[in-house]
Length: 475
Ligand SMILES: [Zn+2]
Image 1 (cartoon, rainbow, N blue to C red):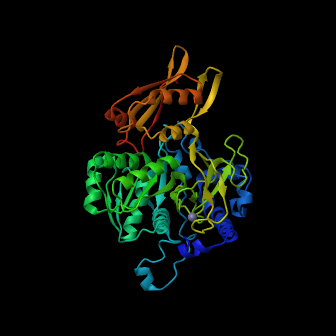
Image 2: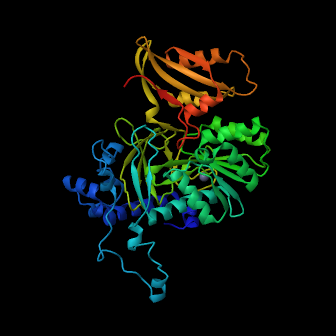
Image 3: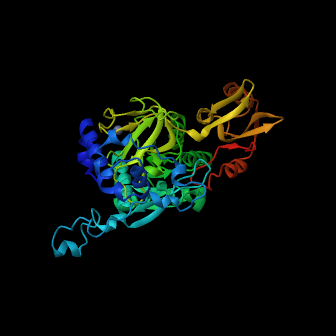
């Protein structure tokens, strides 16, 4: 853990040196007690305690989800959990009797940093089984720290009232905000999101608390703000909304911000956080468009070609690969996330806040939003990240979901829509049809449906985030 002020003022080279130092410490002090990597390195004839930095890191193959949780071994994730050092290996506690009585020093270097504190799960966005990740006391400290640093970036203080409407599930999205608001001492209501108390009560809570800050996933923030405008409910104290868990394209941020204004909000700032469970913390954007600021003392990010694994140059799009630099409990080296940074990564200082943290730029696309479709020109791999963005850009759509079906031997799309208030007809269905079939090369049906059906189908108040695209083809 590095002091925030010091970290904020470091130059790019100092950040790089810090990451090299942390990586070396991870290799030499921790990885020899890591059951999976120890075995892997031994088999390759590599001695972890002799590895020194990012050059050596490249010798290690990527870790993918299936390595952690193979289909036939539910206990396998425990092989990724660091063993605690033996009594002799532990650093001796410094200080006299008083500091021992106050239990100082336990957080850093003592046995407690290895003690299991919470078990979290990945969001299983791919539809597969969620992967369990062990967080120790030290990891929770880092999670708290990451949340607090974000609040500091955004100018939140203990005088702010915060409504945490991330979904109450064992995932870092809800818990980073929980721990950070507790640490900050802000008035905070941990609602657990729509799945726990529903939209109406979240709005009531926002009004009663005179909340300045709302935190939730982007689809739900959009839904809540639309509802405020529809029912003409005002939230005059609201200043900022923090979104995370799903990628929020700029058009969606703009829409949320506009509806905040319509709902009488004092200010209409919207901030994004990129939660990658395996990184063990969420990374904030200081302001939209400036990239997710990777806490350089917590994790090392590489951007690689999703197919070949070759490293990409600065600002070149590619897959996000993460290595934990300061984790205990579950530790991952070179975890290939399945997330694509469309703008790559940059090491230039941020033009907005000046910090020299590595920044992940552009939208975060999901590899699992690529679908192979039978089009008129044969089989094609189509990017539904783009289609998702396109549909969010339609002002005339309040809610929507998309089904991929197979009918009469060919693939087709079925788009179900609930138009925005006052959107009228104006050939919306035709416009959507030609837009989507032009993009995909397969037939598209557009159908109106009720708001209840949409919310229910996309699970707006059921999961960690909503689901918009359903592949209903067999296999
Ligand atoms: Zn910045």
